[in-house]
Length: 81
View (tube, one colour):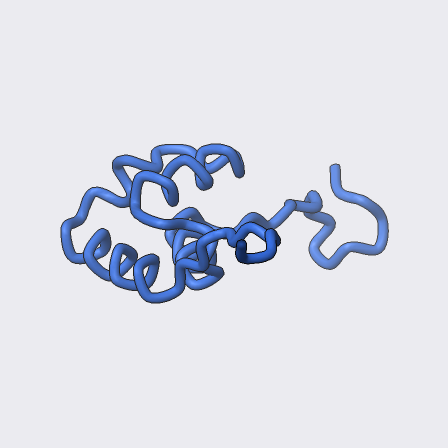
């Protein structure tokens, strides 16, 4: 049963970001140094079948290039001696 007032009387579905789209978001954010880090982040976010979805070589190549270009290593806020 759907909730009253919903078009078509269907149930409410929660939309999630597809795994590949999320992979590109993480890569562009600069949070992932490489594909291995990116995969760990996707799995931590609850994405499933990460290895299978990121298996195509061309997709991995694109994501790796984005990770390398966007990665921002954490810097220590210590004064130089």
